[in-house]
Image 1: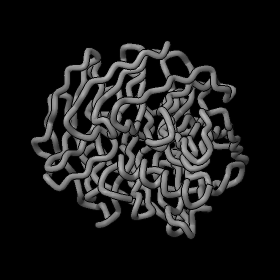
Image 2: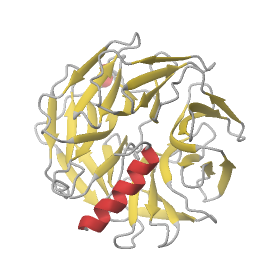
Image 3: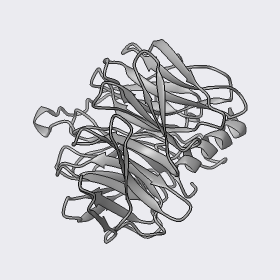
Length: 360
């Protein structure tokens, strides 16, 4: 992948679409938000994991590619569906629990929008990061878009513990973690973030702070007052931490996209990496805490030769990894993953423009 999540998601999706019919971080893929399911309510995965695909997304063959999804305030799934900039309008689709598309809202600006993430805000609206137009967007459930311009490329976005939304952004010379209120007021925090940072994902931690990934082998923590601390000890050099989520065990879990590993970091900064059970050369992308107490993640081998090795992964809090490949297209390029309104895990297939649901 490249130097920012936006490049990864958009360029790789286009690359794989042209090659075979995507992504980053993302991604992008997008990201689970909110607290992790409690371990007290966890139930183990069944002996049979069943994956079902759904095709009811906006369709323009070879051009649309979904990058992120979230559970909306209305009890439906909302999917950010990008399109090649010369082919039409970007779309946000509302999907029922049955996998049926019930609404589609299209967006195009004078430039080239590129949605990289979507999250439900504290105001009952959907919020999107648009790296192509360098803006944050608010979308009501009845389809009204409002744009809040920025000066940098926003990537992942999440509802914070303080009634605002938080996102990461990368610019030409600096990277920052930003806070945006529901009326559009933005505060940028860059003190404590290295000048070479390439921030990718952000999540709410169990300690009430925000945690974020940095492709340059770092995990960061920022308080709601803007105090930043980064951790690198224990992260294998060149591994490119990508997506991050809070687990049911009081720690944060993250994907190492280039390292083919899943990492765990405690709130004190202790890192453990896991790869046993993961197919060599796989790239873990996005991840979410499931109701079974485990972490579920998407993965694929992001090269022309191996683009048919898409898999879904599961890692327990003790580090045991299991991969699944049955039930969905091996060339699908799975990226964004979330916990759906039905309590099941859902993910997008960036290359094949589909949704998939996991039952266990």
